[in-house]
Length: 264
Image 1 (cartoon, one colour):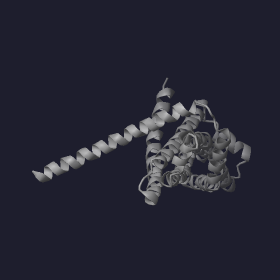
Image 2: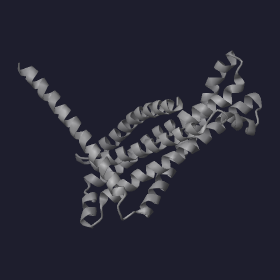
Image 3: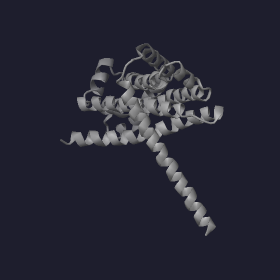
Image 4: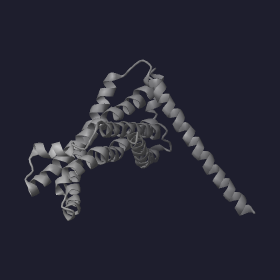
């Protein structure tokens, strides 16, 4: 009887903590939208965060996108050769990279690179009471620290996503050109021949949602960090894990919505 009571207590406590966390995350997100529409607007800090986020992730995205383009081309070629359809390779690469791989790979890289950085930065400021000091100095720390970073990720991730797709297609072109001597113009013409405006808008919507998710989760975990310096590492780790999980869920939802719109 005691064990059963103890298990029920532990389960109830975990459920309470879970719903308490969900409620806090909801209030944190709602507060962001309220603060984002109010003055003052810290444009200088927003531009600085866009620069830092883009510069921090650009080298890794460049290398990853280029490698993905080459590897995906090499993996796709044998399957198309079996059916004598290697001429469809540029179209396949364009659909796969622009619609799916570009936004998703960029978001995953930035969730590990940028999301962890935001969580660790705000977490260290939280545990060292720098955020409390900003409140004493009549500065709204939520607006200055959270709003600017979330807006920066929401703006920067779509740009990086487009850049990653271009770099990946260039890597694909190099591989195709080395095998079949295809010209640059013909390759990109075929790559975008099967992509319509709905596909482009879906890719942009994915990147915007992914960017917002990375920013809001990183800021939430860092802004609510506890337990001293160990809490900083925990906040950074949780920001990465939760961002990646939610990104995959959002990917499924957006693809389903896009397919539903396509049927009309």
